[in-house]
Image 1 (spheres, rainbow over the protein chains, first blue to last red):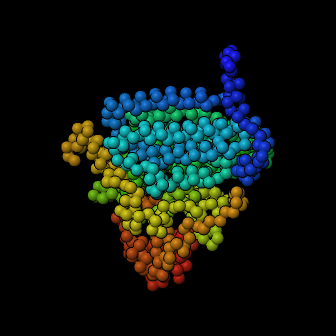
Image 2 (cartoon, rainbow over the protein chains, first blue to last red):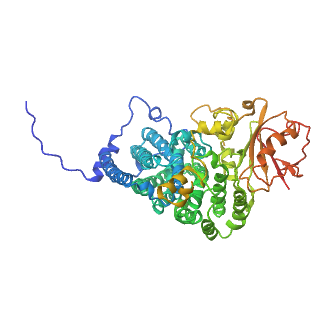
Image 3 (cartoon, each protein chain N blue to C red):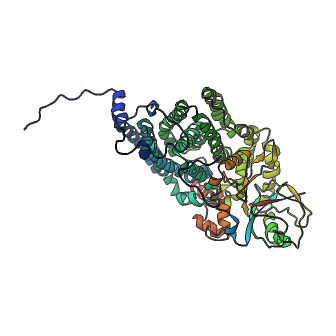
Amino acid sequence: MTATPTRPARKLSMKARYSALTRDLDWEPSYVSSEEMFPYTSFEGIKIHDWSKWEDPFRLTVDAYYKYQAEKDKRLYAVLDGFAQSQGHLSLSQASYLNAMKIFLGGVTPLEYQAHRNFAFLSRHFNGPGPRFAALCQSQDEIRHAQTEIHTLSNYNKYYSGMHSFLKQHDRVWYMSVPKSYFDDALSAGPFEFLIAIGFSFEYLLTNLLFVPFMSGASFNGDLPTMTFGFSAQSDESRHMTLGLEAIKFLLEQDEDNVPIVQEWVDKWFWRGYRVAAIVAQMLDYMLPKPVMSWKEAFELYFEKQMLEGLFPDLEYYGIKPPRHVQQAIDEKEALSHFVYWVFYNFSFAANFTTSIPSKEHQAWLAENYPDTFVDYFQKPRWDKAQRIVDNGGRFFFMGLPQLCQVCQIPMTFPEPGDLNTICQRTSDYNGEHFNMCSDGCKWIFDREPEKYVQAWLPVHQIYQGNCGGPTVPDVLAWYGMQEGDGGEIAGSRDEVNWAAWHGTPAAKEA
Amino acid sequence: MALKTIGTYEFPSRSRQELYGEDMLVHVWWKDNPMFCAAATFRAPQAMSWADFRAAIVDPWASSDPDYDASHAFSWGLDGQPFTPEPGTSLADLGIGHKHTLSFWG
């Protein structure tokens, strides 16, 4: 029997295709209840009455999605090949620029992979097909970002120190526990909290502060591959921002009872994300041989102007207020980067990057950008003395392990509000045990959910429990997978010596 | 506010004192020296005398700063309260508990 030839179907409109390929794939469960099918979307107390109200402004379908991404990958990999073939690693501003990328590779790239995992989970577990499909696309974006970031930086690993064991180090090295524990906190939350934590706070509220500095730094410092990666990820990021905003508006519009829950998540995840951003702050102000803009400037533009003046007035309509503790972040903008780079200067003997006293020109730039704080609070009491120690043949390092905040896990270095000369110390007692926090923000987070934070894997405490290779610094560094030349002082480091040799500068002849 | 969870949620602290046997963690904060970016954390026997704690643990760390003078008479605090060290008394008998913070200045 022969089939009757049919006329080819008319091409569907974009809207109809989106509907057919996403929303139409949904069904009502018949032999299980919807609670059994979607067991994770009720325990957080969020009420959703109509999942179809989730808007996807992009109306992406699977086939279109993969086509766009493949094109972007092709362009990126062409640049990576060209850069490698033309010895691009020699055209950076300085070898020390890559310290920023060493932090990015170990601190941020593994988070992309974790985001991929959790968005994949959400793409199964949200009740509505709209958010499920949006989560699926974001899940694919995140694994693509992890892969392309690794490929982008892998060429440098052939020539420079500190990038060889980034995955292992993400799980082990003391400062990497800051971004890692931040993400673990989100991964172990419920699906809606994750959406506010990562989809909204990380990908919307703080995304420009977290990513733009790295990509602009790359562009100013001759790192063409990372800059191209940034462009390749940018269209994904703008989609993520739109979805992050859609997510919070969807939750707020579904039920008034959701508002106080979402407000607490905004409060918590703003502060958690802001503390992670401290690592970006020091990178922007201290690690770029050719600086782009100061942290203070970036914070004012990307956070105060775009978010506090742009976003929050819109959210006020739903009853959402700016994050609790936001004033503390604003007050810290004059000092944040200086405190955090000083931590790294104290401890880079145990890191996969190097630090040094900023050059005279760099200190002049810092003084110009931070006229009220740098000279009196940081240059005179810290850098001038560090320089005297160097002039006497030494190098200041903190010969011990620092007190860590139980929540953000950063060494407790941050200032008491209104007093840059005093470290802020906060404590809480829970179940007869004493806990230490770096700020009112972190203490508020701890006191809200102490059951969660008592489990924190604090690197310093783990070392003292004997879980990190042994009791001595060399034992721990071996367990971290550190190799000769990874950390310490920039002057005389392996990367600096190689750089001078490759460029035939006088320092190389002496070395 | 109670944690919202999908089931029973009871996990022990990952840094409870018993994980350190007869020892404990003690924080030491040199308050008026900005060279040290944070207080230090040490593991020390609860029965260690103050004199030994100073000589074996605090002094080597504070000597990261070449200007440190171990014989200088510092003022001491414990969790923000005035504190008077006694060389022959153990840390535990001086009231120093697991993960509490000693500070000195002057």
